[in-house]
Length: 78
Image (cartoon, helix red, strand yellow):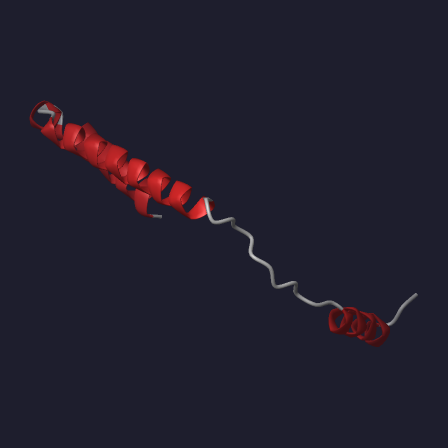
């Protein structure tokens, strides 16, 4: 059975031998695609929120509307 010191020595030797490769992960066309997807995502979120707050359900059902709104905002920001 290995002792704790042997285990730590093995980990240290392995970590010293590994190196991080420095190469780009994304290609040049990934950045415009990411920008377009970000704009689409934010615009769909803005459209949904505009539709959500334009409804008059909060007048007739204030408690369920508030609970759903708080749940949605917690999901969105956490």
